[in-house]
Length: 126
Image (cartoon, rainbow, N blue to C red; front, side):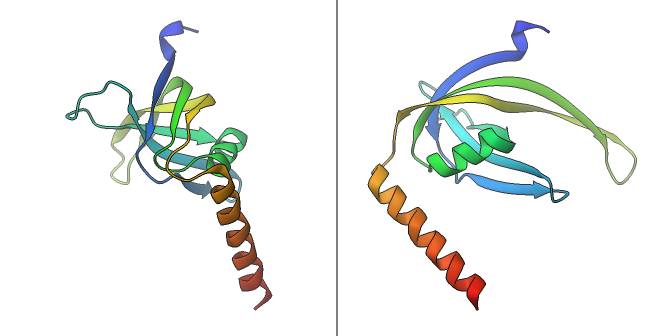
């Protein structure tokens, strides 16, 4: 394995953190991060986190939080509907560390989570 496939980036999460479930088993969490020191012309980096790491990020972070992400690169290939080859690089989160939380406090985050849980339980009871 080449060390050029691994790296670290520190930046601010600039998108909502979204979860997708594929084939009812694989949980994928996706978000974008703007590296510290990036110019205004630079696009945010799309990040992907799988299963446990993604679930932990989903619970812990929001848009506006600053994190350090350790990642690896993966090149995925597939065939589209017209049987043409396609490919893309993915930046896959392997670990993370909190640098600074955004505008809401940890207590406010916990309160929001509890309210969401109560709302989900109320909807499930209907």
